[in-house]
Length: 177
Image (cartoon, helix red, strand yellow):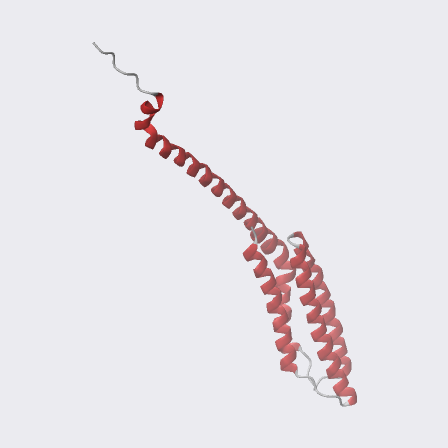
């Protein structure tokens, strides 16, 4: 009687190979899925902290909301050629103080991102420049008969600055990871 031949070790494993490969792939996919979920949750938490807490609770009340009120008030309060030069100068001085207060409020953006804070500071300087140019030209027009500045253009420039500031903040919120 013949003794049965012993199978080689790899021949014994051959029937279980597909199951083994599927198990290894499942382990790899599970590990990658776990890492992806962990990173995604971390990014979501970071964005939540920056957006929900810092922007909504800290920065917005001291800067964004006052900027909205200030730019909305310009439509009715920006001086015209019917005002006296001294009243225009007082208006400009008052609004420059308010803009400086806004600048201080927007400094809180440094807690979130220095480049965002710098971009907003540049737009706030542009706001001050628009006001100074308009008020200075209007005073010059009233005192010395220089060209009359365009009030509507000044208001459009102020609105453009305001929208640009909000756009910078929105851009930052979109890319937070």
